[in-house]
View 1 (tube, rainbow, N blue to C red):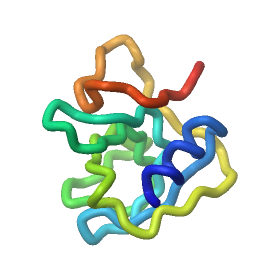
View 2: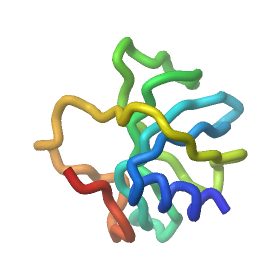
View 3: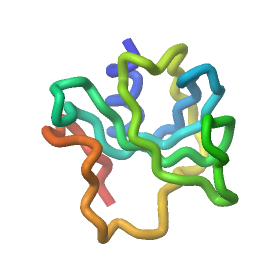
View 4: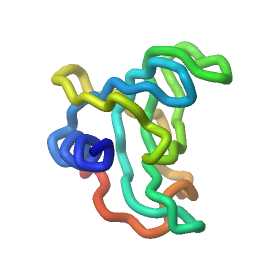
Length: 101
């Protein structure tokens, strides 16, 4: 179910709220597919909420296992992204969908 919510959010540039590793997070998912080990992965920009590591002001990129995302819900809101898109991402090996700029 989280996969479908994330997929739709990427296609429509919608925010997602969810629980991940026990923390409430607000993210904008950018890339969805499978990682090197075959697990479903999402590369997101987290702009609010908690984390096991401190979220810096302005947000940070997060690589997340889809099967560990709980209570994913999409919503309208401003689209958040990181400053640099020049560095290649290594979170998702086989891309199913990614946000267009």
